[in-house]
Amino acid sequence: MPPTTSFRPGDVVLVRFLFTDGTGVKQRPAVVVSGPEYNGERPDAVMVAITSQRVDRAGDFELGDWRGAGLIKPSWVKAVIQTIEQGTIQSVLGRLTDGDLARIKYTLRNVLAL
Image 1 (cartoon, rainbow, N blue to C red):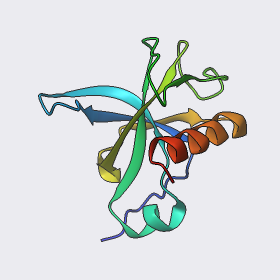
Image 2 (cartoon, helix red, strand yellow):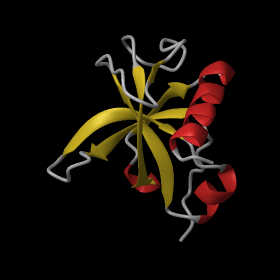
Image 3 (cartoon, one colour):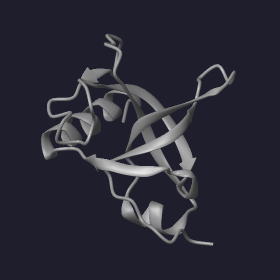
């Protein structure tokens, strides 16, 4: 069944994000990176994690306008990708600026070698 709410790339949402080692989950903000067609036809959406902990690994970067994205402190995008069922999204916090969203797209192309 298609989701009742369709999310757009750049929406900053609050979700339960699975740890990469599979040992647990953490409630955290994330950015929707999948497109409207995908989000409208599937129950899940593709997201990248956001953290308030400074990160400095390949594909990670500091958001230029974290306040405008609805975040409460300086934040970094982590190049950690996950599909999450749209029905489990707890809330929409805000939206990335066009510049921050362009940086995510550029970063994902590099990380995924596209």
